[in-house]
Each structure stands twice: as C-alpha cells, then as structure tokens.
Image (cartoon, rainbow, N blue to C red; front, side):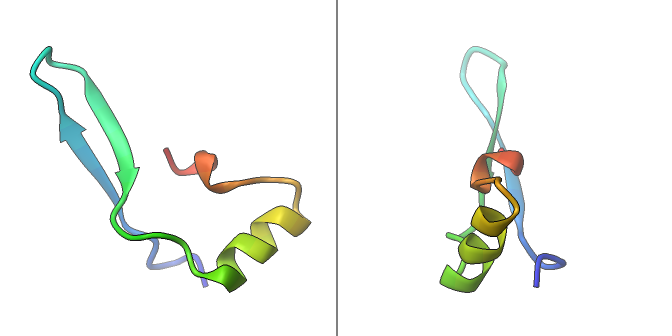
Length: 44
C-alpha cells in the first residue's frame, strides 16, 4: 500500500528544500499509520 507514495521535493527561493506528498494519503494508508503510532509526517 505504501510502495507508490509519491514524495516531491520543492526548492524554495531561499535555497531550502521542502518535502511534500504528491497527493494525500488514502484513508486506508492513514489508518495503518495510525495503528502503528505514526502519521504522514514520516514522509515529509
């Protein structure tokens, strides 16, 4: 279920790199992460 989670890198004007999800996680992905005591911040 997590194999195709797309993380994009955004280069900010000040040169810093910010990570973001390409699209929101599905409800099933969120439920699994929550069961593991994690949230989507592990990707960003």
